[in-house]
Amino acid sequence: MSSSSKTLSSSSDEDSHELRRGPWTLEEDTLLTNYISGHGERHWNLLAKSSGLRRTGKSCRLRWLNYLKPDVKRGNLTPHEQLLILELHSKWGNRWSKIAQHLPGRTDNEIKNYWRTRVQKQARHMKIDSNSTAFQEMIRCIWMPRLLQKMQVSSPSSSILSQNSTVNHSPIIKQLSSSLPQVSLNGHVLKSRDTSQSISSTGSIMNFSHNPQMFAEYPSSPFVAMDNNYVNTFLKGCYNGDNHFSNGMENFNLASMVPPEEFEGSLRGCHVDEYNWTIANNLADSLWNMDESWQFRQLQERDT
DNA sequence: AAGGTGTTCAACCGCAGATTA
DNA sequence: CTAATCTGCGGTTGAACACCT
Image (spheres, rainbow, N blue to C red):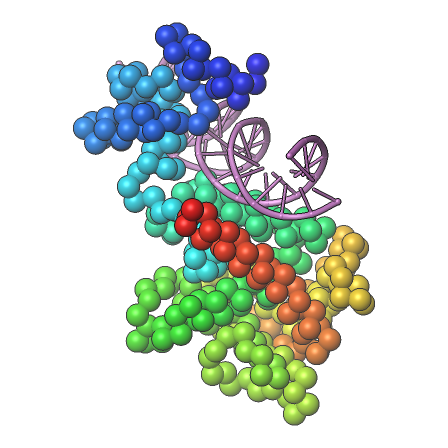
């Protein structure tokens, strides 16, 4: 018998001593909450036995930590939180609980779900390994600047780098903000911050600038900076000529994309031609729209 | 309207390290 | 010191729901 069918039939064995499984009821939640408020959140097996709940200690702990605990945040992840997850995952990999420690109110389970359902989904659609360098570069080059832009748009008075920022951005985000590509082209501004990098006279150049501090802070980050050819090659690898994702990402030659050695520790610009700028924006938009539609659904669900 | 398919996320599982007796 | 138990972690599952045909 599957665990789910066991759960569904559990109402018929109310009088048995079998452990309950599956979704928690309101009564169980209340019982657990009341018990913890009186005895604290420890000794889960003892709690499970003496509270009257027919659940394992593990199940009680999980329910409390992931759902019932008062400081657990509900609702969609903010761009700030998403950015943190992307960056911290690039540093630590699937260390969900460690990542969760930097997102107050968010659980490791929630972060893990976010990664699997949003980030890995994109990788699957692109037919590319989510752990590959190419995908990580895509996140850094396109997705993260978009999230930064979104943070700026949602609170324009609180530039991440501003001294007067009213929003309490984490040091990691501030560091990240100064290290991510600064993107502008033909009036398209991904990040509304003055940049010393200029658009070329033809207006067909996208500039990326980087902050060497990033590499002192995160020397092991796989998100290394890219030069012109690097980004162009990457983007061409993502798409066929007709602006559709290539099915041949696995043939992408990563060896040709290794950034020059002399880059590290130095400021460097990176140019992307107009063709690839369009491609990059299309990709960013697809990620963006997915994010927007998801948040819209969340709002609808919250309102109903 | 009904059935199929895809997505999300709460909950479970197995394992490993920490703690306790 | 050792075995038993507890706790926490990361991977996986499946019910519920949304969307599509």
